[in-house]
Amino acid sequence: MPVRPPLDAKVQIEVWDLPTRVFHWALVICLAAQWFTGEFEFQDLHEIGGVTVLILVLFRLIWGFVGGEFARFSAFVRGPSKIKAYLASRLRWRMPKEIGHNPIGGWSVMAMLAALLVQATLGLFGTDEILYDAPLSHLVTNQTARFLTGLHEDGFDVILALVGLHLSAIAFYFVVFRKNLVTPMLRGTTMVDPAVLPSKVRPGRVWLAIICLGVSASVVIRLVYFT
Image (cartoon, rainbow, N blue to C red; front, side, top):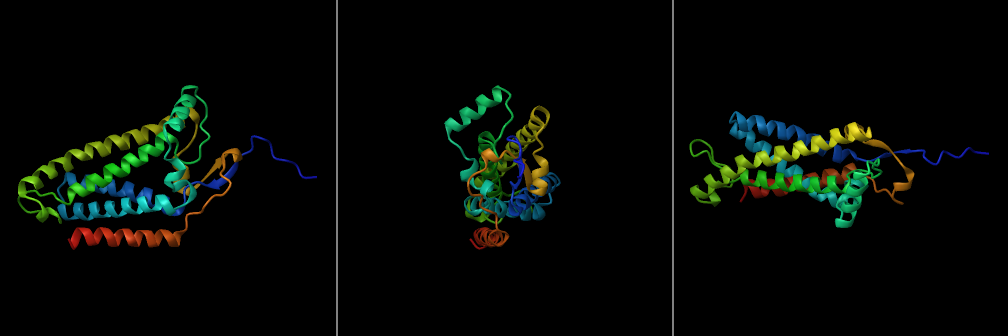
């Protein structure tokens, strides 16, 4: 007679599909590169990096509807009642059981994507008034281009603040709940309570991600360089 697993036994699942993980770490590299190229005024490289960020963000927005189960917005963008329940459980210091992003983390993802979209878009209209004009600066007046350049420079502080909150949340989960959030984003898998698993887990298909990335690149390059 087979031995039943303990009621508290956990199972291993793929929480982050490969395209989501590649997107995440590519974005990390891009943000570091954007800081470096912006700080030391490598404008041409900074432009390439900004366009790459736009492509990645557009890809992630599409992937949020067609990607793997836990990469979809429907899996982590929650309403007020879910957020309230999540905060109440954290105040009782209970170990979180959600898979993927929690309700607060889900909205922080949306905030980061929105901030990156705005930041990269502003950069397309920038100018240094000497040697460099961004690809879409010809669509606005010089005064407007200077104003948008200022917003773009200040906007990176918002990005840094969001990154800081993200890193603080990772540290909090590790210290308080002994839950490592970094390793699953590297290898894709994690151990979860079977009780919280959805009835059907949709996989993140690499071939579909390649199509989504191609669409994203085509749209961004068309808008940036052929407008």
